[in-house]
Length: 162
Image (cartoon, rainbow, N blue to C red; front, side, top):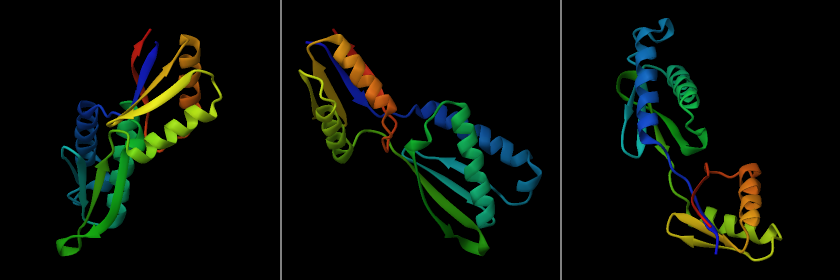
C-alpha cells in the first residue's frame, strides 16, 4: 500500500550558516557600529543581543533575510519577548521549532478526512504523520493539498513508498 510521511525538519547547518552571515554583516554595517549586536547559535534556540531594543529588531530582520536566502522557512522560528539585560542592553531568545506536535498532527489528520479522497488514511507516529492510500495519485493529490494549506509549521514529505 503506497504511503508517505509528513515531517517538519530544520536544516541546522543552514541555520548556522545564516547566523554566521548575519553576525558577519552586523560587524560591518554602519547602523550596528558600537551596539555589540550578536547572534549566538544554540541547539534549540538562538540568542540575540544588542545595546537597544530597536537594534534587536533590526538584527532579527537581518537574521530573517539570511534564513530566507538559505531556504529555511521562517515558520520554524518562534521569537520570544525582548528583555532588558544589564546596562540598558537588550536580548531576545528565538526558539527553533522542529517536529510535528500532537496538535498539528491532529489538524493534519482532520485535513486528510476533509479531503474526501477515498481509501486515504493518516496516523500520528511520534513527531511525524504517515499518510497511506490505495493509489499513488491520491497521495500526490494529498501532498498538493498540504502544500497549499497554511500550517503553523513548515512541512516536508519524506519516505514515499509505492
